[in-house]
Length: 372
Image (cartoon, rainbow, N blue to C red; front, side, top):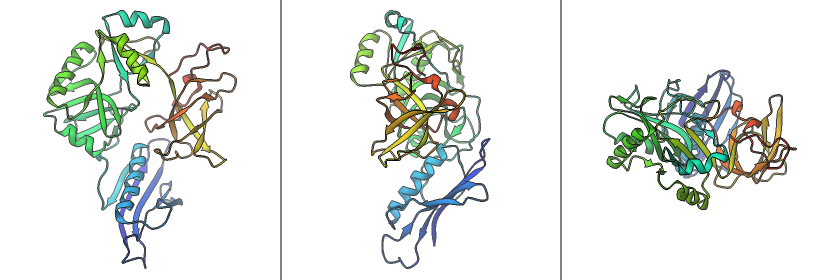
């Protein structure tokens, strides 16, 4: 007997594929709490022939089956799949139509290290913490769905139900920009509130005031990003001591400008560590809990080393895009030195897995390339 099913498809070009997950009661196992299989299949739409079982160690009870089902379902939704049919079970993500919106995020360039002292001293620039989450805009009340997310590609996505419930508590309409870390949302900008739109003509200083006012009324709904104008040097040292990723300098008079400028700009990123998006080539052939990585150099995919995946992460699939922090890259080999696995990047495609991201070891030939 089938207890629960979902049928998901991904038809965003060039894809035309499906993913199916079920919870099935095994005949002859009735009377035992551990009586369920969680099979899955995937492949081209109409001919999904590959698959297996999520319960790799044997039959499971309903609680464990739902955990396995929900985890895999969330992974596929984040990869671009849309749920076409579902039957039974709790809903983990809010369901929204994956459609492209006009709301693309403002993006950073890296600072010129020679400008660091000038930025620290200037009262025209603020410093905000750079977090290790997923770039997500959250929208309430401006669309068919009550609450939904927008990823860095400008595409509507579902959100964890816990996040939806907290944002729903905000009175009226709101549109925030920030990062999602698990079920915690950290907001650093506000783009719309009720009938007002904060666009290129509204300064960051005014947007920050509006965001802070909102947070003071609804501080359970989201976390306010760390931000300072007067104590930038102190905050930078605190972030370094906390082993944070870095900070972002933002021009207080600047408006919100979607996209990334060719150089410079109103948002300048200062990283203590470099990070890069990479394609997973394959699991480590030695059987260790690590994966082999690759980057595209404009002509071919090049090996970029391997990274250990800590037990609190699932091993990523072959061809998945993942994010790694590293100290520097070696110019000769292109491999990362001291890489640390940060998790999957379902908001970045293969087009983002390029060698131009890399920060090379100082002193190597042609070491003037900057990190992304």
